[in-house]
Image (cartoon, rainbow, N blue to C red; front, side):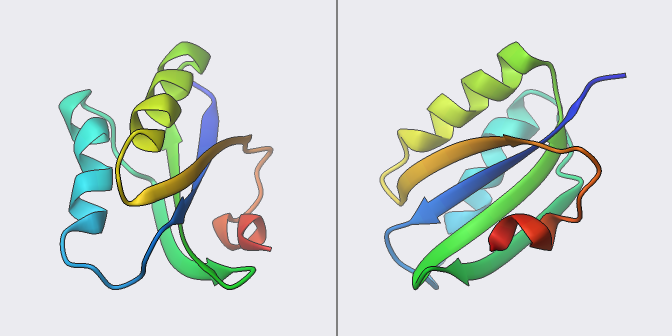
Length: 90
């Protein structure tokens, strides 16, 4: 069984059409499902959290790929020890 990860993405702006679709694309290309998705605001900045199962290597690759997107200010990979996704939004 592959470990679960949460990738926290800080975005440059909120409510732009197609942002979530572009973020989901690298996962779809690799045949990965997004187990949970949360769009919220953390510390006054639009944030999207995605929870997925992948190897360490693939999770690192996805984080780097997402970080290169123009909408993404920062991408952080967090391990998931069974926490609910909204707990990572704090």
